[in-house]
Length: 309
Image 1 (cartoon, one colour):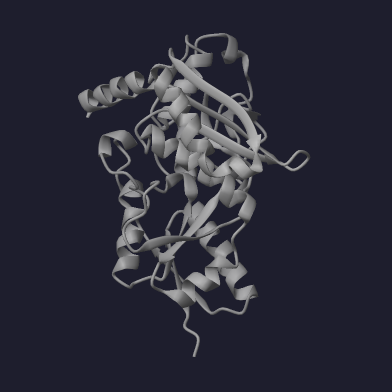
Image 2 (image 1 turned 120 degrees about the vertical axis):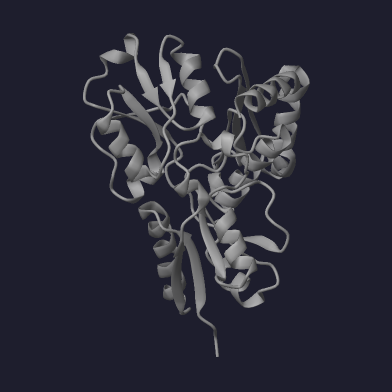
């Protein structure tokens, strides 16, 4: 008898939306499923910036342990939260078709602050650095919590605006009318993509999940995460990456960046390659940045973050 696939997820509204999306797709294929929600340390500890917590994969660790212990069969994540190296025994079983990749600025109805002094909220070093690079006279404050909590904090404080991933707000119908698309901001590697992981030795489950895989999203997120891994990013450096497939000429267009924490230094790479060259694109793009000053910047960032911790 076919087993029931137990879907592990964080218990935030967005995480549950993602789990239910995967559940529906599996049910439509004829599989029996059950959702099991657990709270991660990243959701519990809200008074420290992520880089101070010193754990890569703070949002995924609890589910990894539950899967290794046999409490759940799969875990569903926002792919940008997943460390580039998965724990031993756990495999990437599917990447779902990507949603909106953009970051957006949610504001309070008046955007005059863009030309004045202002305070912008974000818990992301990448967003902070890119914002300060474009608006050096602004102040950036830390903002933590799930999307619902962050939206509430924006309303409760006198900040001018806060930066969010468009996909997260769109998925749970929280995206307000008062937003600006930040099409100049390079998104996080794998932003807008959902990944499903499973135990590598669980053939039944891996086979079931693999049917949900979107090959174009898988390739593009692979390139972005390879770029991140080569730069040694994790949660601890302002790194952006976006790979997009251009079907008109069968190329992959890549845009990657590494910035200093204050946004004053910026290394950027933009290139297009034939689809046949995708497997090493992220690696070579990162090496180009590292060889042209990026290595020294990464060392400086590590020292700065160590001093803050």
